[in-house]
Figure 1 (cartoon, rainbow over the protein chains, first blue to last red):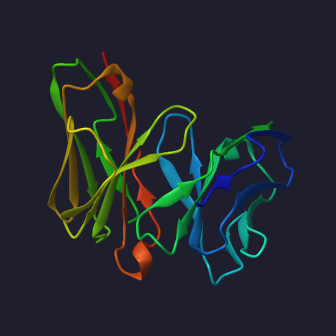
Figure 2 (figure 1 turned 90 degrees about the vertical axis):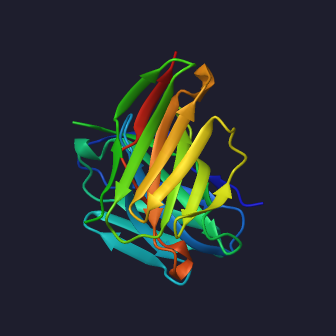
Length: 113
Length: 114
């Protein structure tokens, strides 16, 4: 059974720092992995989706990598800003289901001005 | 346009009320989803519609009744809810081909059951 873990649960860093958020999964047979951002009480915003055949995806200051063999994905945020403060969730889709996402519990990120 | 809209933003209802949540997307997606999210938890899948037909019901109580009137609209009818049903209800959509692709979420409806 696939399990997804995000460590740490919370992270606080000064503005301007580059940072890395981690997502680990137990079964390497994934179809894709998606990173989301959620502001308090709001919906989820899709940040990046990485297909199983890809090693990384980039969007602006965000870069997501995928290493299936080690069961890890990282989300790199460059030059962090207070507006990046949010909860970041990763979700994995396996080959055995067209719809089911297996979610991590999220990392709550606080960027201090 | 990658927007999924949901109405209302907030809803307070008594346990004897009947209400409906609405979701709309115009991305041409033929898969639509309802999720429930409790505070500090990831979303939990409730229902999946594929080509306007219910394909997945994750053992959701019958007091929640989904409806997909057309390819752009998804409703969730609520009746005789319990206080523990209070949560953020999220709608999402995705393509059906290419393994159901990337899911796009709406802003959610914050539901409080009194």
